[in-house]
Image (cartoon, rainbow, N blue to C red; front, side, top):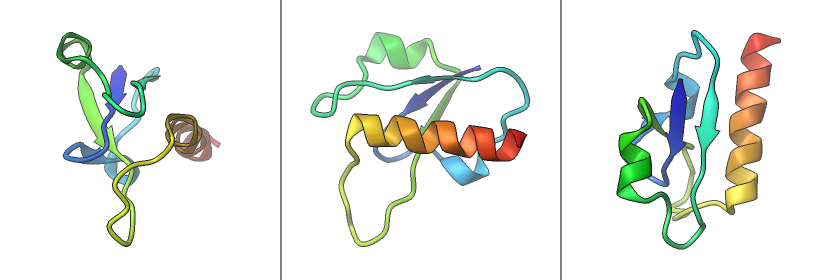
Length: 74
């Protein structure tokens, strides 16, 4: 399953079901993922953020997503 990490509007990462192999797709910090790449992903996911934070550093977002995946697969 290819999961596009998007800053907003995706399924909240804690609610996403990881029922098979996962590839997280991340884009540039400023422009995000191009539409053709987004179209090739089965799911769009967002990391919930408190206090009106607009976005995360791409490396941080990737690390959070990988941590969530490994935490659940324990």
